[in-house]
Image (tube, rainbow, N blue to C red):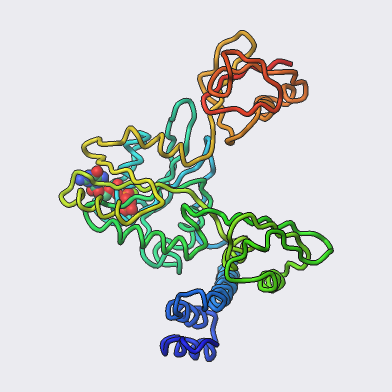
Length: 388
Ligand SMILES: Nc1nc2c(ncn2[C@@H]2O[C@H](COP(=O)(O)OP(=O)(O)OP(=O)(O)O)[C@@H](O)[C@H]2O)c(=O)[nH]1
Ligand SMILES: [Mg+2]
């Protein structure tokens, strides 16, 4: 135990030792985590606390589910349609439903009071030949991560989406709102605009633990990593590390309950007094988010939102045509780095089975109608003709 911990920390630690219920233990661990001095020397202690917290939270969730009879309460499940599902997330009254209506034309309830929207409401956004499903979520409030408001179902619905649009009202306190939203999502294992640590874990049936790239370990050594792995019940694996990583990064990679989501911020109500200052403060505060200020009422910047949402998705649009025929109006959404053969497979299995070559027009082609093989990597907006 390092001597430099604070009296608050020791008090929280005592509370932890005497806590009986999971709930009290979680509260005490959270107090320990916030009281522990944040420096390299306490990193291992911090990690230990985080691991105990995550284990206890999982146990508590299980207990709750069992009490409810496994169904998990009201379901906010929205069936995915189109190329991707994107959630509109924000505090009550931040302008989510107004934005959904402006972008998709869907008639939804809009009101100058909290919780106008009571369940996730999907609507299709058309973007250059593909459809993106936007889901207007009920307002998120402080404490959703511990079940307040529409807590559990709301967080589950957000976990399921491919990307997130965070809405903050620029005219009030956009920084406070953003931090609240991020805090609540983080508390439920949602990592927003964060990079997955570049660590590969190849689990094997035998052979013990081997670490490749040990030199990249920051403030820990291979013994520490092995200990973490063993505690997480990984006994045989090859761990490949390609960039500087801490023990916390290793722990995060092992935690399958974490979800990494990309997001942009839309600053709403740009027409109201105070919104200009709100935007300036937000821009200074935020680093790893794109911010788009809008006014739904004055139709400012709404036109650029579809392409901003599309850029979150890691998908490309591919247009197909039968040899010598017309180009399809609708694009086929595909993962970034898809090949001609992937596209053939998506159109029809016979095209995939009997694939001979393809002709390509667009960014990936050196010239119009270039003849390419099965592993040619496609780019957004390409037109392809598959020959069998
Ligand atoms: N001035 C101004 N008001 C807006 C704008 N966008 C939305 N509003 C108003 O803000 C209020 C809330 O809008 P909603 O779209 O219902 O907000 P919401 O985020 O869906 O709210 P909940 O469903 O309760 O979570 C309404 O009175 C809207 O008219 C805007 O760009 N400018
Ligand atoms: Mg609403």
